[in-house]
Image (cartoon, rainbow, N blue to C red):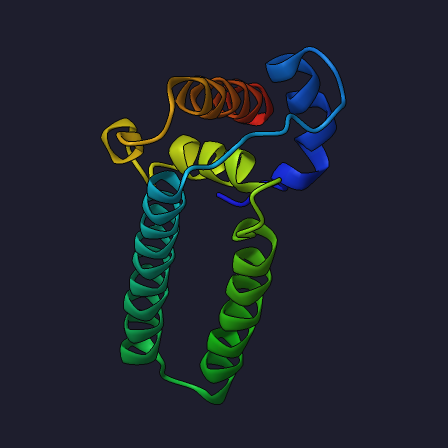
Length: 137
């Protein structure tokens, strides 16, 4: 299911942090390495899902129209990845919150980050999940 988390960002940021301001975090070298590892592993997992889906679509292709559907899927996937994966330290808490809400990372993946960062990631994920549930039919 596709949802535009960026459109919900101001609302979720207000619910998670109490205001619309960016929360500034200090990142230790160890946390930076851990964050990069979490980010890269989630991105690779996302790519693996796209590859699997493209293979399934290609195997089921029976007409030229099916090729264009694969092309459309790839374009949409690229846009989704570009929107979702932003490795700026000012955004990574939100990115990890989205990934946690989607199940692309787990709470155990966050071990090694400071407690305040993990708490904000989990809060952001909870708000996103509740918004998704409210918007589902």
